[in-house]
Length: 241
Ligand code: ASP
Ligand code: MG
Image (cartoon, rainbow, N blue to C red; front, side, top):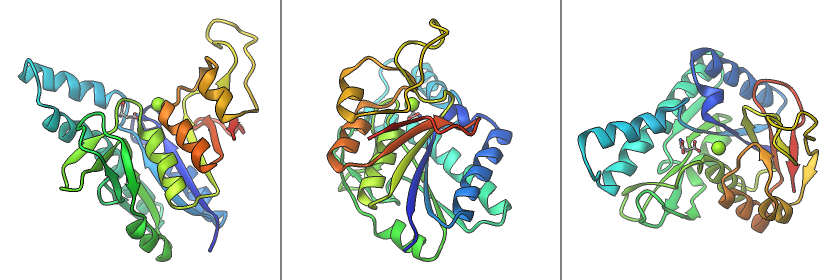
């Protein structure tokens, strides 16, 4: 089988139609290079914050169950749109919700943890040579309740899928060039790290790309190399390994 790459795109990389189209072209390039590609997407722009505001506007204390159901829709929107954009470029692609993609979680509705990844559906689609686009940040419980994984957790979906599918690498595309030793917005000579170890990444205060901590833990446990880089440029970014 060809190499499998998992790519994750954050909300700012998907903020509008133009960015979604440019993300689709980047995904397509990876496919053209002969890889199997699984893509994990976050919600577009500030969608998640907007949904939380909407919940708070109708209820003083929104129920956790429906909050998870509500927030999961943000990633479903970007998943469907990225898939459509890929198809309009003539790529075979299919979009899956977290549950459809086999992300099984415990039942802490809005702070769920992934218990297991059931890779069968994704593997079937990859065998048919499709690009698989998965809605990040969500899963389902044993009883098919929709859950979300906590703010910023699409990274964790991506690394969990990379582990469950035995991917060669997990690429995280964001709006900064990678991980820095100091804050590049404050210290102009802040240095972009070419690489960093999982342990160091977990212990050190790092700047630049903000990664969901659980994604680094999973990367360390399953030994998945994680490349963090910008979706707006062509730079190698930072390799966490
Ligand atoms: N959309 C979710 C959030 O804003 C998850 C993510 O972006 O990773 O927290
Ligand atoms: Mg993030």
